[in-house]
Image (cartoon, rainbow, N blue to C red):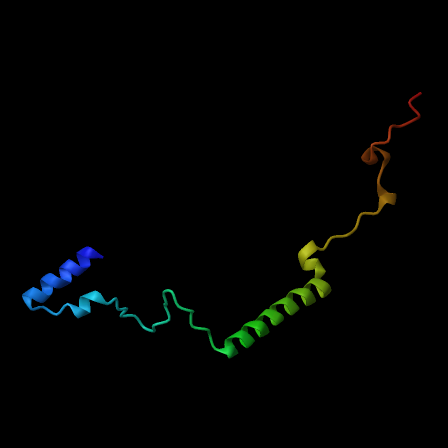
Length: 97
């Protein structure tokens, strides 16, 4: 704080303009950046669009999970246990005489 004041005083003594040096300015597009203030609230229609897109996304996910479950879990034929042999099931043959 003190160096800034001393710098401003020396510039005054030299006859320079020091007002532009003391205030912070942003030379960007829009001035939405705020410091120690409440931020600018977006327009209400943006919330409606975001909610609509959110609903559409979850509808898409749930409908396709319900009607096209094979894309997620994979489509394969279920094995028939009647076709398995005793060796595949790990059953020891009793007739070893």
